[in-house]
Length: 350
Picture 1 (cartoon, one colour):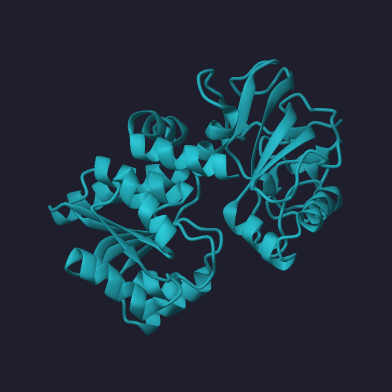
Picture 2 (cartoon, rainbow, N blue to C red):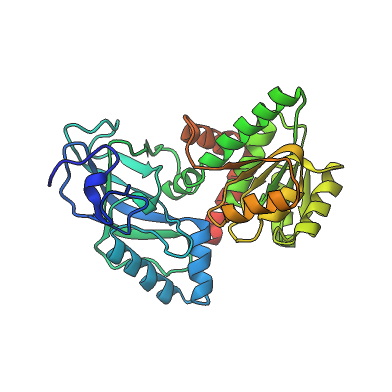
């Protein structure tokens, strides 16, 4: 095929001129340009917001979820949920590397892509026959294409690939949380208090571990149901664990304030449902920071909500990438027993 740019412009079918993530449809043919890499795909990991939306839409009917995911990929040449705007990432084996590719991989490497499926050309060849539509992880056969500016990690040999995939899917969260905690401490000359909404989930548990490691003065994990509270307490990742619906701004702010003795200096949103923006802002102290690490976030609601509340808070979009983010997340999995336990239990439940 014709050569492409490092950002994949040659793969955009429509509308021409936009980057692959913004495109409606990509060219997912298997032939690669000189700067591309082809991956033999073995498993997708749908992001939590996308999977929840699809599952709720089809009332838990796995066959219907499977059919819709397959339809999206066929129509768009990528996994790009039209409702949530999100996708996920994948695991596979490097099949072919173009001679001009700058990526440090070679044929035979088992890898995880660290870029979204919403910008990754993807074709499925097995009809998703091995997936029951009831979990975020999707066993499959097919191929995907990486560009020169894609990000990819070689999977460690000592971990279950499903475990690596689950961690790498959210590896931007702990890195950004740690950076934000350290930045606040440098600016305020004091260690911050940190609240993590969705603290028992994948990104939430890693964010709590990262906040503590980065020097947070005190942490609180917020969860919606007693079962998640019990798991997070057993994991020992937070100083306090509280029950609250993150979509109820007043109740959420009261729970965080009660646990910390005041609003949080840093609030990290890791909840995969919409409507949590105002509660996160209300639970954060003036001069504090809110990190929105959720694809369910409405950034218009966040901006207008902060204005309406006269809230002097810095709001950050968790973009999923910081230098060294994959290595840092994997180090937390290896060294923090509570993180490992929550991830292992989640995989067992799936």
